Image 1 (cartoon, rainbow, N blue to C red):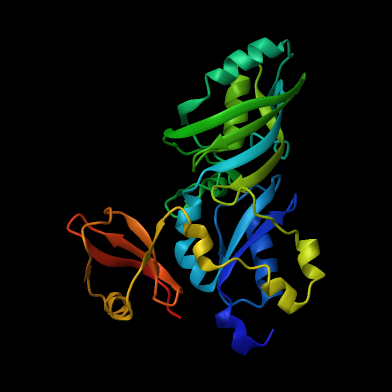
Image 2: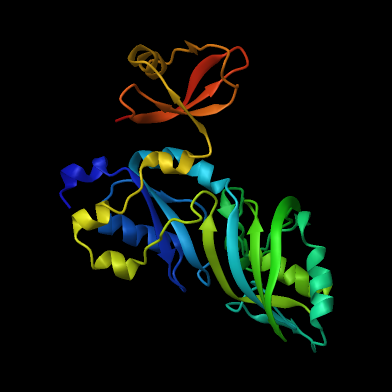
Length: 298
């Protein structure tokens, strides 16, 4: 791609992450394929995991946080009777036990993990402490104190059970670690458990949107790849749309507040100009003054 066009790549691509690749490695590969100067992803997947990894290009990176905050849907397989230091099959075994668990007992335990629950992040998670991910400390043999935090398990379904393996589908809030969830379920059964398979089916808002493998992207021409990009505002469809006049748009771009009528609810809005072009996200205050939150710079 012509370097002169690099800054013009703005949009979102849903990549189907392959197994045994880090999220950052996938990001860098896709970034090179598109010749993009600026790109980021919304939430790391473990090397073991596959599935939806949204890549944001250019101006879209201003809105990554909104997808990070979205619910996620996973498919996973757990193995009862074995715990590992990473809570998945990539780690070293730290304990094992015989498994005498029937399906009714498993279903009873699963009910305890639905709704708002406390979860303690693994030492092998990407959660940062003092600017470094926890796995950095774990790889040097250190164990640091981690605070438990509330997460929301909105749906937890048993899709198959062939002891010691069990298949789950999980709809959860941001910040949920599926490896920890599976391990905690094993602990509640007094046998331990670890993850052997993990796939993110979708991130909230992209339930029915196709994702693309790197192998497929490599086969495409530059124009074919660019045609796959979703517009920047695709990450913000949970917000209502608000159309502004040209002068109101200019005021926001100059850092001014825009007074609106009181027929709108004080909340965040997707902002469009009179020609239907999206140009950012704004917040309407309780006194009906609109202020810019994130504006595009093109």
